[in-house]
Image (cartoon, rainbow, N blue to C red; front, side, top):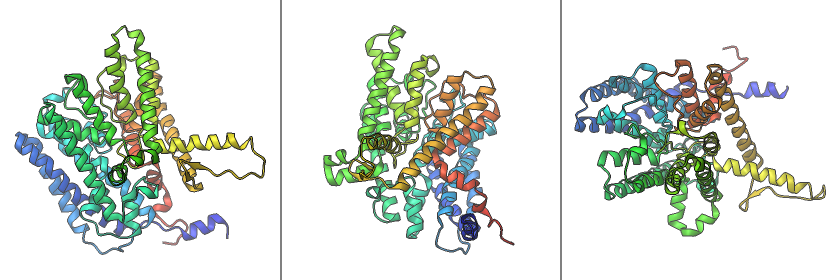
Amino acid sequence: MSISGVSRALAQPVRYRVLARNLARIGLVVIILRSVSILVSWLGGGWDFMISELITLAAVAAFCLPLAHIQAPEDIRHNEVLVISALSFFLSAASGGVPFMSEGLSGIDAFFEAVSGITTTGLSTMSRIQQHSTGFLFDRAWMQWYGGLGVVIFSIALLFPDKGIAARRMALGDISDSRDILGNARSHSVKLLIIYSALTVFAICVLLLAGVAPLSAVTHVLSGISTGGFSIYDGNLAAIEPWFIQFLMVLCCVIGAVSLPFYYRFIRNGVKELGLHPEIQGLLALSLLVIALLFFCSEANGTDVLSRLKHAVIMGLSAQTTTGFSNVDVAALDNASKLSLILSMLVGGSIGSTAGGVKLMRLLIALRLLQFFIQRTALPAHAVLERELSGDKLESDEIERALMLILIFVGTVLCSWLPFLLAGYDPLDALFEVVSACSTTGLSTGITSAGLESGLKAVLIVDMLLGRVEFLAFLVFLYPRTWIKVGSKS
């Protein structure tokens, strides 16, 4: 039997009962999470939004409660884990988008806003944001916050029993380093939730002590820690004074772009953990580089040095952490600045963080592999040279996965760029928009708006989902053998 024949014979499609039960349980957790928005809407007097939210969640509960108790095997296969992960974001966005329509958004714009929220992107087609209800403004930021950690993590921490290897796969997400695994699935998820919540509460307290209004402090921290970037102001951070408040909000983004398990180990092991994490060093180095590029690129604008530095710091950190906060009009930036931001958004933050992009670790692996090949040319043919990064051996499957995801990411950007070029948009601005969506950043040159063609909005929606759920999960979702046993008689 050929390799393809063996593959076909051994292929195990997903079991629909397993998917239904686990997605229903995740749906119940989403109901619990979204009840916070209902409470805020009630306190803020946003009755239309609250009623719409209640009706939507009642419908979700009616659908999920029976399915959560159906009989199904307790074990979960790897392809089922990836499908559940992908569908959890899509279904969360679908249920979250319905209440948005009560605020006057069209169907496509409401779904766009919800996808942008749950994927922690921050792109928005809305204008006059400040005119909307308190509940709606909070809900956008709240959706980014729980989307940043992931509804699967919340589900395992709050509801799911520990199912060994299967639950472990669901809990780990894109974490590949064994040092970043904090115990079993339940323990890992609970510790991440505690770390994430503690960082959020601490940041909110800092902003409140700095004199920021409660709604502004809470929503901007929720968006910042999740590297989401939604703001309650039309001018984003430019509407906030003084400048050091903007800087404090952007520091939330930096906190979110660092691998969450790092904080747990840092508390236990102290400062020496900094030297063991190449991603931390890479995040600092790339942030300083993009800030310097933006600063020198803005020299021709004629603004004073301090203003240029302020804008460079905010925009540089926002792009590198894939948050999307801004204090300048991106469309007015020169081409060199836009290109610098594009490259920064492409790389993104750390694996295991809330940031998007291809992730720093994968870039470091690719660069280390390039260095390895260059070094290899100067050695005898029989010489043995280990592929290592910061003293850790790089396994072949780790290298293959990193290079594959980088290739898929770049390919997705190019494929998504083409429809915008055919529609006549400026090439650099269009590329900026697509990279921003794929890296779940949210910075925009102004192309994303209510007037954008529905087909192009759909392209950006797919890009945001791909960038958040990881491309491999989406490819598994599209793979025919995930759903049916190819070649079987059934």
